[in-house]
Length: 295
Ligand SMILES: [Zn+2]
Image 1 (spheres, rainbow, N blue to C red):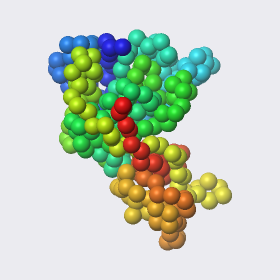
Image 2: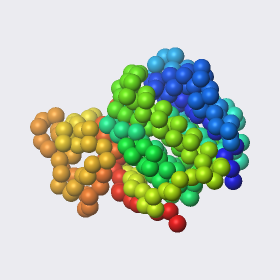
Image 3: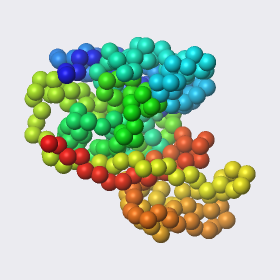
Image 4: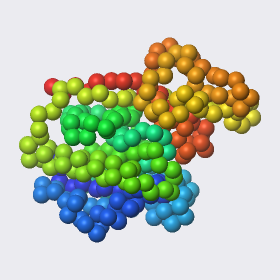
């Protein structure tokens, strides 16, 4: 089924301002994001958080889109209300008027241009292969794509298809030209893919595409009171999508002691030392390397 309506969403997190300024650019030059076979609209997701230059006002907006939360009228925080408004505008989730949602994010981690895919399937597999062909620096990140769509709490899952453009490293509330350009390039390739997909003009795609699949998050070391007592080890700082082997240094305690990775097999890191995850004491995501295969 063709892609007829695309939505590009920015500033779901109010201090990830790259998306905010990309939307400004495209509002001034809408021809950049239009393609002949579909309509593209833009949406500023969290204007109040942009105004106060914070990730969110009351709750993390990108955690509010599970179907049971959208249906829960007792959830009345600013982002919980915004989620319902956005779902009505782009979705509704499960019966969406938007065929493809592209949600723009940045990370303080050294992940480069990354495409997060919260769902699996042939459309996503072709998109992944296309992006690796057109922009080899892109990393494909399969994010809990075994979960049913209604359980996903991400904004992008309001669309029939949805992806997250996640680019870093960039500090919160900072604009960097390289990150801005990578975010724009990746987004435009996604639009070009949708156009080629609609018009049956996809290039020959690689049969196999390397990707990383989310396994679990690791927490920073804390004491019995829940206070942080250590930090991400310098060996894995900035080493997103690099191998972490059993026995490798993982954390350094404030007292100087090194904590080693205790897992049983080699995994790969992502969102290493992400600033936005400090409120949950998350240190890094662990990923497995997988291959996306086209039939
Ligand atoms: Zn974000």
